[in-house]
Length: 536
Image 1 (cartoon, rainbow, N blue to C red):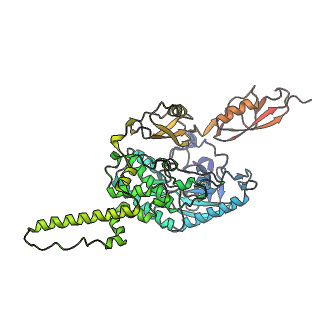
Image 2: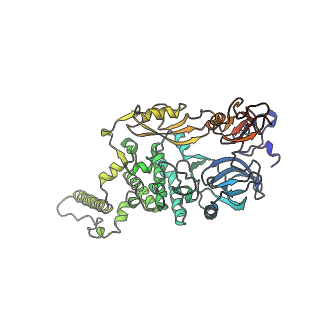
Image 3: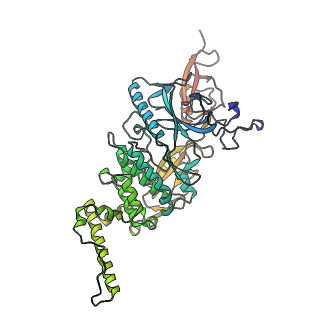
């Protein structure tokens, strides 16, 4: 690759060092940023092939890096199994070490990660699944190498298209992913994290399924910090020791379709357990085919017992209004009905068009009987489906969503909690931002001036501030005082004591291996030297 200091650690393009600007002219990445403290160092070479760049994402299961394959001379993404709640890293050699009493859990989850990666690598023929090209062991852990495909999240894609997609657009881009997820679940793999963040859209406008993780990181009740996508995670994922699988993925996929169609996710499953209505207005649903409404409503049943049982059944429901009839034909009830495709009766004194109209009426009645039998067998009524999916416009009050971006989240939350607002507010995620101050709102859904029902929830993304933080002045402070300042700025303060002839005992001497004004990454450990007084 050449001299790594001249290479962008995000896209691995050559930097223009003569200008002195470390911001990449190709991808815009600021190469003055430091690596996260938990991660492998920049330019680490894994398996003699892969040069490690910046951290792209991190969750309870592990870390994903931008990387460069020296063989193919292409960018890749390397996923490292690093369950941060039960391991630490040896800074000298990069090895991953289980914490005390966590060895058994680490070994079991590591095996799950290996098996998941190897299984995904064997389904590379599925075009909509992000391909794994290599799986290997190093640093006492496991790594999976993913093909890099330029793409954006489905959330950003929908936002760029005005906040919602048409049914025809959704039907076109989602169906290949639906089929692929059915095949994947048939192999025993459940994603459990399908969402507008893990479904991405490529330059050609096709869905790409990313974000596979071991199941233990997508359910509560395990030693691994769970990653739950509110609005998409099914109720069983919030219940310890519940069975999670294809039914859970069906729920999440349907919720993501709802987001694409409306710009809003359903309420969190734990809330829907009390009020299962999806709270989607008739205006948003008016362009949807009736069969699609029924299919989505069934796929989003809160309890597993009433939910669509497979991706194949969901596909049938979303692609044809005759699905219900096809399913009912398999039951004994259908055999009790007279044939509905009889020949048109011969003229017996009435004009042929009269007999044609009569035949159509008989057919319509038969279809209504069939639909009624299906609804009776499923325990649902037409009103049940309607009431589950939409809210009645005549009985609900609309409110206009205010502009909240670049404003303090805590202040808005306090207003909501005090009843000053006609809506609720919830944080979907917290992200780093160099332009939005820490604690302020980066984005909101619905957008400003959009309409929602009174009492509904506005979902926001809150800034964690810049990923780089500046060390403050600390002279004349006690460790307790500076610890508060550093903790508030997301540093991790560590104290070491030294004798000092110049600084009174109990007060700070200075930083160790750093100085005031230095820039460090979010969450970095900062060692503070505290005086024990003059040497006797």
